[in-house]
Length: 167
Image (cartoon, rainbow, N blue to C red; front, side, top):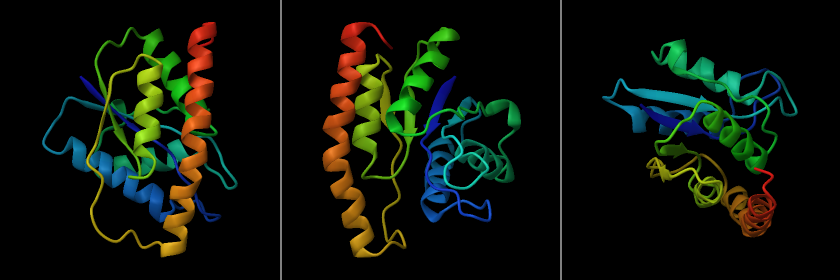
């Protein structure tokens, strides 16, 4: 069975998914299209607004026809690195040996795949949607610049965790 990890994004004050969260779920569904051997692990704790990012994504998946027995929630991750750590513990505890697929935003994908690989989880990206995201140019620039700082920071922390055995 292949596992698709869906990394969280904001939930709006009314409990509905942000456009980014919605696109990440759509990416996962497109990646799984035509296959029945897919398990989904949406990640993300309660952010500024409840419910948890993972539970909002699970609802979107089920509303799209995915049965609940194919969804495993990871609701403790408050950021990318803590989500990867939690996923690592979850997959190790069940003896999972396969590769995972990663569904997230294009700007976020390199960091997610890299961190998973550092933790010993072979990861491949799901194809991200091509076309306008509905975000402004300034918003897209902000998230890309944020990744410039977050990527090396998280990689250094992940490598340190691996070297010290704190996976």
